[in-house]
Amino acid sequence: MTETTVETVKVLSKTTWTDTLFSFTVSRPDCCRFTAGQFVRLGVNPSKLKHYRYINDSQANGDQPVDNKPVDEEIFRAYSIVSSPYDEVLEFFSIVIPDGAFTSQLQYLQVGDELLLKTTAFGFLTLARYQQPAPKDLWLLATGTGVAPFLSMLQDPATWESYQHIILAYSARTFSELAYVDKIQSLAEDFGSLADNPAKFTFVPIVTRETEDDVKSIDNSLFLKEFSKLPKALNKRIPELLKTGELQARVGESLDISSTHAMLCGNPQMVEDTKETLKSLGLVMNRRGEGNIAVENYW
Ligand code: NAP
Image (tube, rainbow, N blue to C red; front, side):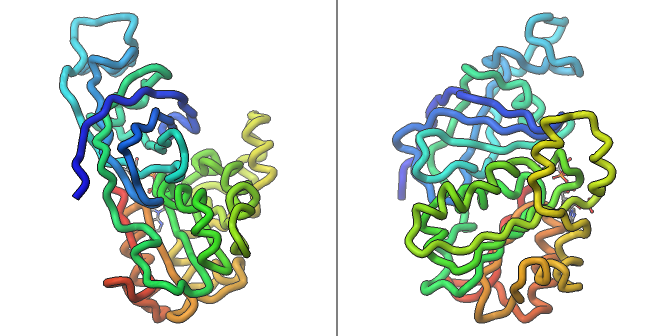
């Protein structure tokens, strides 16, 4: 078994998607090896961040000390890796959980801040869990930050070589919470093209609490530019889209026991409901390599 070491890593970049969603990259220690789809444990010591949130202080402001002190302790949380196993950096996608000890500190990260990383990767939401040869289709079904492990898989040319059709259905409450849409739309070109005989790729955005009309009135040209490139979003929850066949119709494929691998990641209730729906369509849980469905709850 690989020995876990705790390494100090430096924040290299940060992308803010919304008030509650952000991504960041950190330096990757040589000893940190992982398979696409796995997670690692990241640690933060709030007192070591340039900007941090003071205890009981709702206003984040490292420059204006109030009477409280930042927490001086290491807090670790599991994070799926967004970047590919071949990248020189590690990328993560995070939601801010109100009053969450970890993410409420992490949201104030700045380039140059230091985090801790336990270098052993975990998790079985990987393509290696499936016996080969792979069937025709790979369905990746995600909500929210649960898209992270799928982004890693889709940046691995081996994924593109293993299937004939890869489908990513990614559900968020609002259009602005659909992160990485530019990247998703260039994945086939950027990573699929490195594979021999690459799979076809279909991206299905799903937005459950807004319509296209709601966002047309938003005064944000950058957002509208991104939005204009999106395929038309579906607007019901994934299990319902599967039950009615709307998702299959959009993709042009059916889901069945002989042609499908289905991976689910995100909101635990979505994972549960989707799993049951897929079973009602005749798919079975993957055990010891055999079977269609593999899942990861995200919290
Ligand atoms: P979310 O409620 O998970 O919604 C994201 C998407 O998933 C929406 O399209 C939503 O549809 C859909 N969804 C929710 N429940 C579903 C179900 N049973 N079946 C199918 N689809 C479902 O929103 P989020 O913003 O990603 O996360 C919500 C909260 O979860 C956060 O505020 C945070 O506190 C917590 N969270 C915790 C962690 C953690 O690591 N602890 C990680 C992520 C999120 P609807 O619009 O119809 O609900």
